[in-house]
Length: 385
Ligand code: NDP
Image 1: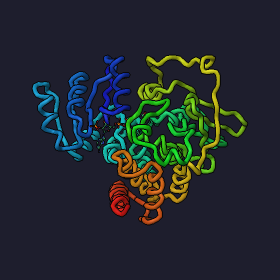
Image 2 (image 1 turned 120 degrees about the vertical axis):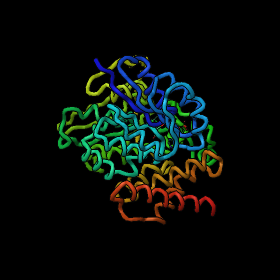
Image 3 (image 1 turned 90 degrees about the horizontal axis):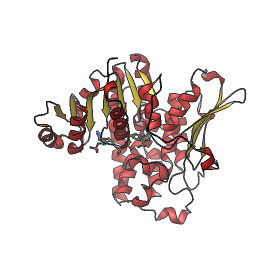
Image 4 (image 1 turned 90 degrees about the vertical axis):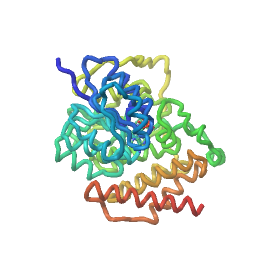
């Protein structure tokens, strides 16, 4: 069997590490084409050497000298900058894992999609911001888009072989994040260290904060709206603190199919890497008797307004999701750097959404321009605060 080629965009992150862990276990089946990072040249070079990558790219050009130095004598090509990132994504690879965090991953993800091969999409902000533009690119290139987010991967699996016309509803499960039992008073003084300490999942800082605010679930609602176009009224959210049921699809006959699994991203990543086959993972099997019970409850949209804001942005369509995403990225960074309070994140997003309503994007360049302008609106709000 010939090895399949793989490119990992965001190789030094949490999803990148989980993907490479699976590749490491089946080294004979994979050949690594390109690995990318933002500025972590040392880790990127280490991974590129271990996996014998053909190309390593840092998005931050200032990190290129360090990358070159760390790769000296290895024969691995090194490159830096936004253009090099897109060029790396445009190189042939049977599979691309799109795992850059934020809208920064949009242009390389689109370049991978344009090739018409398989793209495993973890970078939810790209789909939230570019929505119709990204899905149109998938249709045009014939790329196979495999949802990697655990919820969307669960839905993808539950839908297999079924017509969307038979779907009565799709339910995204949410752990509720680390603050799910907190009061308004506690949320007002929540610290970045508390916000990134997720009870069930080990993830990067940005998605961990999104999980704490529930923006993660809201972004996922928008993501699901594009991946599984059954209509927003059929998309529901339920809080499920154990994170064992990863999402569900209810059919018109009253059957509900759910996908269950451990809280380990290697399970949905493996599903993407092996699709339409299956592969082994080192994850422990589910022990339902040991778990004892699985609980579910409705989300609290008063304490956690993010899902309401995301639903409204999805309903508004056009540029609204890109504006929401950009404002959230700026607000999360400001919270992580101690500039604003936790509860200010949603307030800021709502303010930017209310102040700035650009025309719907028709192409990638429009989305990038909307993202940039929404960010400057958000930064202006930060300066005024
Ligand atoms: P991490 O923060 O752990 O990793 C992010 C990766 O993107 C790193 O390789 C980082 O490089 C790179 N990166 C950061 N900024 C830029 C930039 N401006 N340009 C190019 N590359 C950049 O994030 P996660 O792995 O947690 O998440 C990645 C994506 O997957 C996100 O969209 C997230 O929502 C999604 N996701 C993550 C899950 C998880 O369990 N972690 C679950 C489901 C979805 P460097 O190391 O050099 O900074």
